[in-house]
Length: 494
Image (tube, rainbow, N blue to C red; front, side):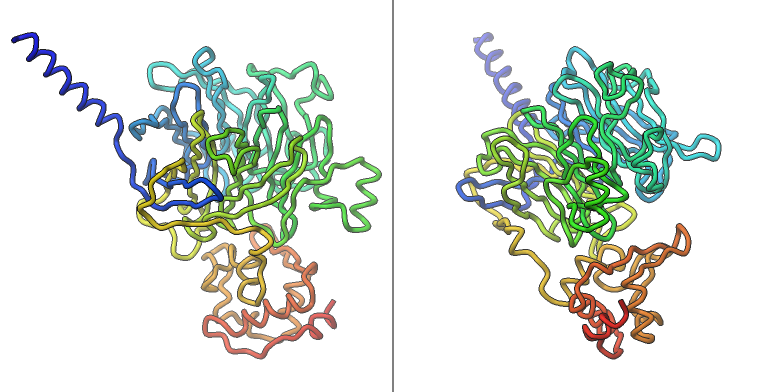
């Protein structure tokens, strides 16, 4: 009898533990694909701009937050534990704790690699550091490499190549000439051994540089075939996804996007540059990038998953069989969860995305309650919430002045025309917007380059009618009530 009571008590305890381990997550929405149905749940919330997500073979999701915190989340329970706080992280605008990579054989090599910006005396630097994981913490910081940093254009992502080399995608540190300067490590894909040494099979065995000609890489992914992809911010035009080859030159700052202008074609011929496999104008501010190779979500198999900031979306870029071109693009969550910073996939085929609504440039209406969040997207057979559907990219192009404004101007000056105090001026009630048409047209076509704190790219690539629609929308919105601008006025100011 005592033995039966003991067995019964143990069964109750085990059942209780199992129920605790299988803690349910908050269900937000469902996604309807061609054949599959997915669910979107909240894995974690109240985060400080989760900039990078990494899945490790220990079954945990690792999270790097911009302010300098590294945590890991037990996926079966959602329990999050901080394992590191980097006090020397220097954060301003898009600087801070940025890239992170966990060793692909983490159980045998418990290394975590991070990139962050810091101040060395009066200099801004960007550091690549290796930590060792032991007893639920990261310790033994080893500085592998230090390069120039800035408040913007730091990149930066870290990933492992198929043969175990460390790849570090750097930005040009807002000095455009760095991207083509072989003596600078900015605006490059760098390739290292895990101890920080230079691999002997690099293009130059005395240099970390694997590829060059980049502006501001925000995503870095490696496919199951070993192909390396990046996502990159353009200026006012031509955001990119690139397929990275050894010793290749991707053209920045002399080429943006496809080689379609006369000066770009000349530079491409002289320097044997490589075109992106996808580019966007209007820009979408691409961010985190990962490869989905599993069969759990069959509609997404052999695709790049891309999060975006300006377009506030998750994009599924379907690759062809050899992985060297993009066949189609489908858009999910546009303007729904806000700015999306990163994405990764676990071994069970679930997808994780992080919001970026507490960063330096939030969209109107954000952050939402409990932002920032990590959302889990996984297969389900049951539908109980709102069903979301993807939109083909070709069906999402802007068609009127308001839509053109939102895609070209809204991320800086905001949909309500209020801008960002001290950074991007408000357009509502602006003397420049409501002043003489020719002055406003010149600003749009030529941009502003007075000093580092007052810069705006030129939008002279816009068609006359598009430019007129945007400016007219500005002059008729948010309480503004000035005369319309027509396409002929734009043409006369070119």
